[in-house]
Length: 87
Image 1: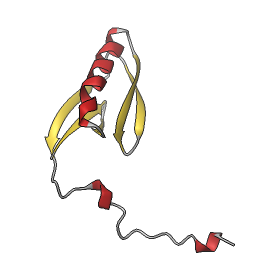
Image 2 (image 1 turned 30 degrees about the vertical axis):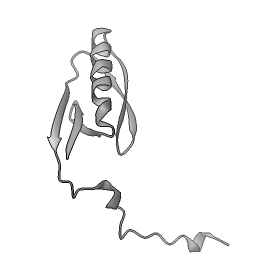
Image 3 (image 1 turned 180 degrees about the vertical axis):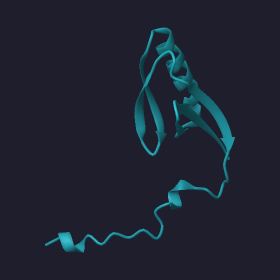
Image 4 (image 1 turned 90 degrees about the vertical axis):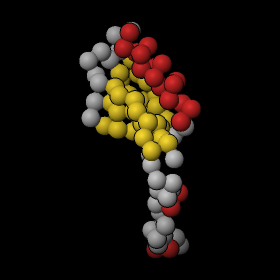
C-alpha cells in the first residue's frame, strides 16, 4: 500500500486521506508565501494544526508500507477493565 507523509521540522505525520496530500501542499505553499500561517493536517493519530513559515522545513513524500500493517488491529489484545468504576 502507498501512503502519503508530511514531515514538518523533525516530526513525520502519515496523512489519513491520501487525496488530501495536494490540499496540504497547497496550504503549506500559501502559508510560506504569506510569511507564515496555520495549516490543518488530517494525520494519524489525530488531526493537527501546524504553523508553517519560511525557514521551517516541510517535506512531502510517498512511501510503500506493508498491507499487513493495518492500524485497525493495533488495539487487539489490549484490555481495560472499567468494572471497578461502575456502581
